[in-house]
Image (cartoon, rainbow, N blue to C red; front, side):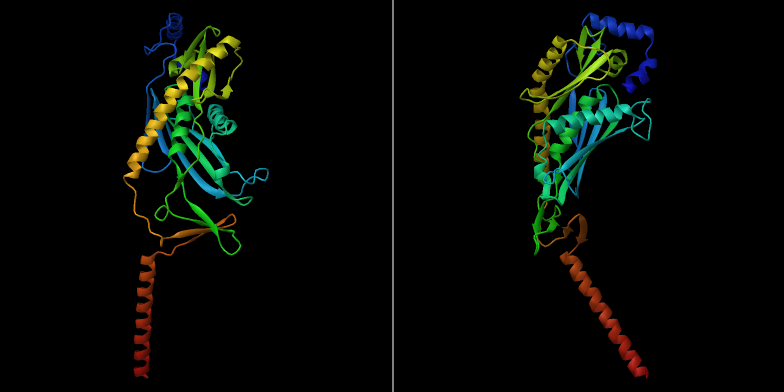
Length: 340
């Protein structure tokens, strides 16, 4: 809630009263209804696993990367994923550079909890060698503009980036079957992550001691509201997570009302994400490159990665250099012999 208190001073008393009185008449400053969602736009970058989400004036970018690491001892057959958030002062003057603040940590935990506890990502498919090597997926979320409701926008950015990410294909071989070969994308098609469902986050703001409820609060409304709650559900209506920070109490009927609103909206948001991902995949499939089976390979033995390149062009260039060196040595031997 530190972001709300940080921007509270920008609103005058008259502005705060105007927002509250408008909500009592079921009107919002931006013209929406109490339960209307802002326009959602999803774009993707040129690289796998990069997304750009704009929810109204809120702008968030997501990036997904992966690397081979040793698994946790209590889960030797499962990979892992982690979420990191970066608040830029360009997005909001109240954000400070450097160490992530309380709101940044809370944002990452809400998204991480929904993905982890609902088992949306198949972590067992990230295992390469049981007890030795697994894929560790990292999700970086960059807040570019804070127009309110960062949780929902960041959640969609993370899901869109995960759905478009492709990890390198790898095979296990060698004499002891402990040698892992990572194939570059020029040799083998990268593999997508296995995602069972999409947990969509919906944030609600409470006003007038919880008697007024709005969906998708804006930056101005966050400075006035007395509390908030984030409900994460999928298209099937399954509840993945509920986050209610602050000390403001909420009646059970209000919580159930929020769950019904989120469930009714989840299918439409899921459809928007899937359609955007399918359009991106069609565009990428038309730009596929030809793959050769004689290109570079990266060999992994245990947790240590050793890169060994054996490209045909480099081999021919190496042979030419060897022949040139051999020629100059032979010429030097002739000169020394005749000089004597």
